[in-house]
Image (cartoon, rainbow, N blue to C red):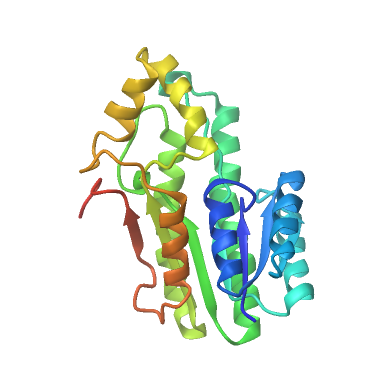
Length: 255
């Protein structure tokens, strides 16, 4: 049985990806800080006869990340697929952005991506079978957005991290990817709508139409299922796409 660890796995994109990979036959590790939601999801999956375990993982903590991966190895004996997905969003006008909030964003998005990828790389290399490390990027890995300077900074950086790790990982059969969706109606995005309306002085409807969906070709949100489908596809890639950033954006930020 192949295995998958997904951070931020108890809700939104992460939850959809956990469910998809469990139903693909993977032994999944649901890694999140919300243990009530994590354990509820694991109970749901095991109730279907699927393999799933819960771990508490604050991705900004080296100790918790390493402990979570140790638990994965104890439970399943291998590390085949890892998705670095945990994230938060804090929006402010740039000139009012508190340094404390910048550091919090960096701790989760930048430090977290590094710690999770490094932990995965170590175990995949030691296992001798390679593996796949997938980062959740964003359309904002390519474009800039008002009020989101640290998010833009981190998501650009995640795409660069995937490219660099792809160079080192190739000889061990470790392939890396960044999935870059446009806006998805997750709790993270729902929370941003009133915040951006407040900070920009516009209505929530205008935030959705004129900011979130303005640059798509069809005015549609990407879905969590779109991301889960891409993860399942990448799980079977033989390296042809390693280092690439895959844009699930309804035409926004086309190359």
